[in-house]
Length: 188
Image 1 (cartoon, rainbow, N blue to C red):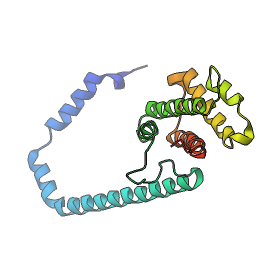
Image 2: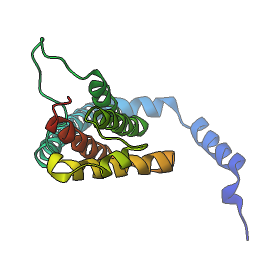
Image 3: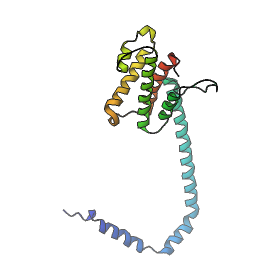
Image 4: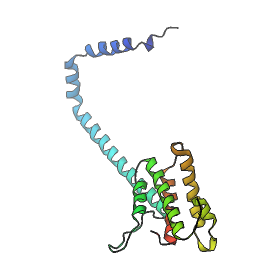
């Protein structure tokens, strides 16, 4: 079986031979003849690409709006200047706004640490956050199921590390669970 088609040297030689046989006068005549058509086609392609980008931006905004309706707004509204904010929560939100998946995971882990600290301040004891949450009376902690759901994702991240894949949408959903827990106790 002949495998000449895999010979790169032969391929490059053929390209060189083709290009060296082209007469510059022919190229010049071609450009002069078809220049108005080339300009029109280029403008049309440019306009179509701009329209496509605008269309994609509109679709992206619609998707973000649907996500906000479904999962709620993660970033808290603007607060008055005299109101004290939880600086660590702001760092969590900053991690979440990154384009890097590792930052999203860091946001979830940081939010879990804040949850553990909140549980200690509320008087729950245990070596782990799971033990602290097991001591909670459901009637005292209306968002305990959301806390458990978020904490389980944090545990998966902690155990699987970089092997665990998470989407930005899922990361936002998990951070929103933490937000609901923190807002119940006015911790953020």
